[in-house]
Image (cartoon, rainbow, N blue to C red):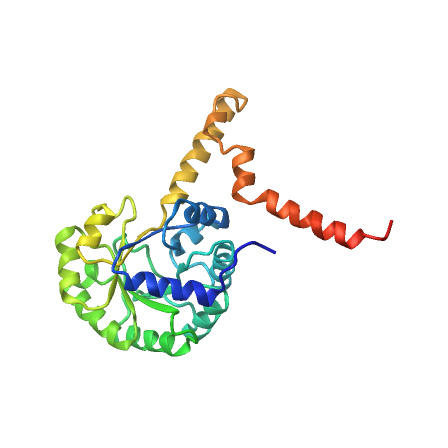
Length: 298
C-alpha cells in the first residue's frame, strides 16, 4: 500500500492540462522510485524514464538489449510512488507496438516515446545510427495511436534523422509522424538555438527538447527553450550521473581511507531518507491495522 492518491487517468489528464498551459514542463529522469519522489517534492512537472538509463542500471550499453518486461516493470515501480505523470522511453517499440502500448498504459504511465531507428538502436547523441524508413515509422505510430484506450495517453514520436539525413529530412519525417497520430514530437540531437528554432517554425503541435549532458546539443536554459516554443524539456540521465559519480567517489574514499568518516557529510541522512519514504505514515498505519486486528484477542 502507498499514499499516492491520483489514479493513472488523473495523471494523464494533468499532463494534458499542463501541456495546454503553454508553459514548458521540466522533467528530470528517475533511475529509481526514490528519485521520483525527490523530483515530485522539489516541484518538477513530470518524471521521465530513460531507456538508456534502464540499460545502464542493468549494466548494459544502450543498444537495444532491454526487454519490454525490463522497462515496463521498472517504469511501473517508478510511476506508482508519485502523483506526477510519468513519461517513458520505449526505444523502437519492442516486438509489438500494440502490446507495448497496452502494457505501459496498464502500468500507469502517462506518455511514451518511440524512435525511428532500427531495433539495434544507439543512443540518440552517438554517431552511426541506422534509421527505418519514414513509412515504417508512420505505420508504427498508427499502431501505437490505435492501441491506446485513454485519449490523454500521449504518443511521442522521436526522430533521430537529423544527424543521418539532415535537418530538413528530419522535419519532413516529423510532419508525417504528426499526421500519423503522434501528439508530441521529439527532435533528437539538435545542435543549438538556430536548429531548435527552425524545427519549431516548421512543425505544429507540442515539441520536446532533450538537454542531456555530454551530447550534441547545447545545454540551454529552460526559459530559452520556452521562448523558442518548446513544451517539454527532459534531463534524462542527470540523476543517474550525479548518483554514480558520488557512489564511485565515496567507495574509492572508503577503499583508500578504510572508513567512512571523511564522507559522512556527503551522504543522505537516515532522517532525510525516512522523511522521503514517509516512514512515520506507514508506521502509523501499520500500528492502526495491528491494534485493530488484535483488539479483543488478548
